[in-house]
Length: 279
Image (cartoon, rainbow, N blue to C red; front, side):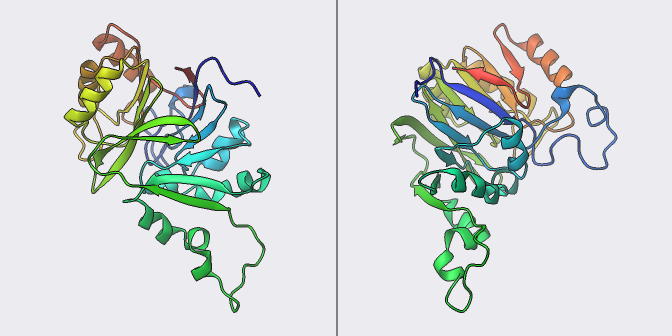
């Protein structure tokens, strides 16, 4: 198969952990008829020039996200961190495994997140302990996943996966840290409440073609970037264009689009579910 001329991103989900609309909420955004105000949990899907298909995070909405985009094949998965809205769809990868010739699907994560994934999904990642001769596997509906954890501390780390050059770095998020990455002119900064100086310097030097960055709400927040902070980091990094992701219901698509246009002289915009972007 021939590769693409450009790398492609599909936004599988653009919302925060609750999604939008929120169950039981009657705010303007949750009641909106605008299709871009319908947000599943944040995740992206990469199709690279080398013809690799890469899933970033496995949200609780994963089954529907893959069906909606007609995604049937994944080369490997990247996990940004261990929070429920980013990993609780892992079991839905079983059908991807069953369709692959090899059947085994690699899941890449940082070593600091590995124990949480193993503890939460022991029937997947600790089969030899979870099952035995007295408790055999019945039914067989278990994804065949191989957890590949890499060491990542406070440094910027270059790592090649299936020939794809990635640069990984950790950013602070709540009581954990999130794996963010750079790939061929694109940087993805999901859940975080700060972008550290060394990462700003690195990304600025790359002259990004596209940045996608967390932008939760206008109000102060302890674990995510606000509109003000997100905009400030975009001004510092100066990508050719920037997409805003992981919004909650306090930000409608139209309102955030307006704020971005008022604050930038280059393309900055809220991403939306099913959107396709190239870099």
